[in-house]
Image 1 (spheres, one colour):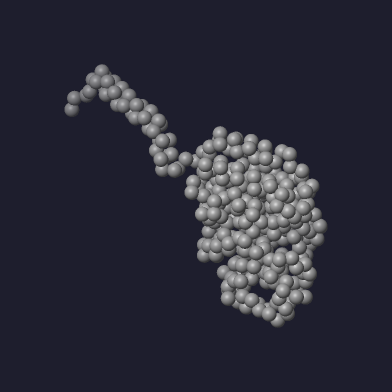
Image 2 (spheres, helix red, strand yellow):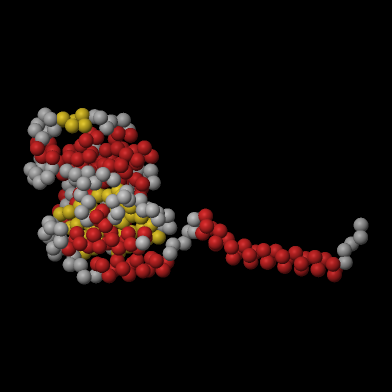
Length: 317
């Protein structure tokens, strides 16, 4: 076998090395485009995030009170937050973790959706009536867990919610589930032993905008209790009667899972929108706001509607 001459070897290596380098250059140029075509890009739209953050700051800068906001676009995994890790009152948003814990008991076989429970006014011990249908129940009347859940979530019935909190095993049981699932700040305070000081500060429950939003994401991604339980929980959260604020700014043909909350000094809403351009979630909570009126032109309600409109236009228009 004849040995190749150094000149030939040098030419061979040089030629093929050149082709290899050329191919690498082409690959470097086209791989990002290929990934983009497949929807595999991992980097968010930084310019879009900056623009959104500026717009949100502009919305809240003159608000007379504290505001926390968290927004995440799920498919691009881009997020914007303002005071997103600050603890705020949940008001009626606390009904979401209660809902989840009830399904946790159903999954464990301790309850079924058709389980019948008997009304006991002294057990619920909640004299305020308002629009609560359960406030009109008499002792001894019965209702299924399924319908009780509908009253709690769809109509935000406080009597149904306090009853379900007790059925769930108390606020302590709900809080245990939250802790086990890495929710550090979201807790039930009302009627929960050891949380009297937190109840005085935050009321029925407490959370952060990020945690409340990510709880909805957990449900959406079938990670809450079980895939089948998550699906049922999600269906409940898409059947909301109170649609005057954030939901009013989303087209009625677009599905959204949500829960609202209000007490005199706080307004809040968490929404996960199944938008055509990809799901996005947001939570906005106010506290210590100056405007305590329960009217449509309350400053907190206006802010919630404005944020919802801004996000729909940002992500979809």
